[in-house]
Image (cartoon, rainbow, N blue to C red; front, side):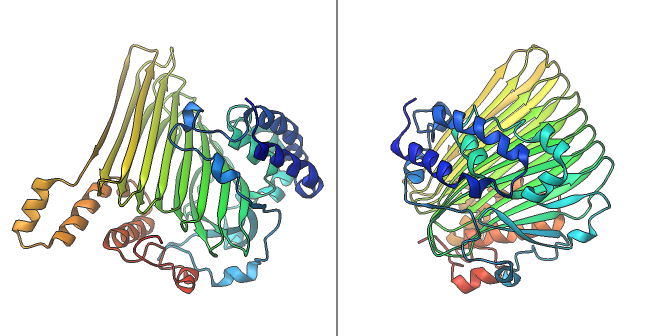
Length: 459
């Protein structure tokens, strides 16, 4: 593949700033940059000619004149004291990042003994054996140009470690904030390790504090050991000028449980790459997503569920509501390996188009090499049910209210998968407000009110 001039300029940017990028990183993180440079030299930023990115060409966005975020870009932890993004009544351990850098945490000192949650840069140096074992083991630089770019440039992010047998009952909430006076490119790296018989709930909330344009490239690797449980949530609620590429790689051992839930309530362009490998017998995962978009927003969810061994189960459900001229894409691939007998795998993608200009591309895929399996997949793209609308109107319900009821009924199945009651209620409120044309931002965030971005639709 011939690299574009911008790909070459990114390589040059790394060479010019290498000392700054590497100065606070763990040796193992810096050692991986050489392989990342070699991989990026071959891959570059993928275009729509790459099959996996067929419906989302991100090259144009990464060619723009963004400044690379090496520091906090003028923001400090003091600025976050007014950023009250905790979910209503959600008793959580809260961490903050600004432009990909860990800046503060609250209540983390009260985590169960041995559990760590904080700066990826600092904790990866504290736990070099964990870094050596897990860093880059799932997100391979040679397989995706964005992973290579992240491995090349990322200096910090979030590190969560739950030792064997520990149960973290309260959610660990990570608030990722983008801010600054200039347009930024941000690379953030996260690592989550949940050891044998341990349990954790992790919530990532992605927000913007200023109206600058942002391109975000995040890689998260999650390891769920034998008989462990990880309940993971990602809430994307950013302004129109944000382009976010998120890679989420999970590996599951025997009898492990993964719940992974993705909610895109507001964005410019979002691409979620979701990978899960069921690598031990009787592993189970439930992966779901809900995207509510309008104007010219675009959301692309790409998933690959790898049933590598027998006796595992996966359930995948993604739903989208698209208004105006928004566009969506879903590619869901399930692979059942030759020896993965007695696999149960189910996948569904359902979409509502509210206008004639909204568009959706969906590709559910099954690749099965075993004969004793129960697998199914399906996709639908359609409009609101006219018979249901007639039923509601006949009972005196206005057309606007009937629309909202039908849209919420459509989204309900995904919202019901949330395992944290306070979080479920907050997501329900946010989705309903989005449908009603009220606040499209988390109204518990002081900063959103200050920016005046709580509006019905993106501008």
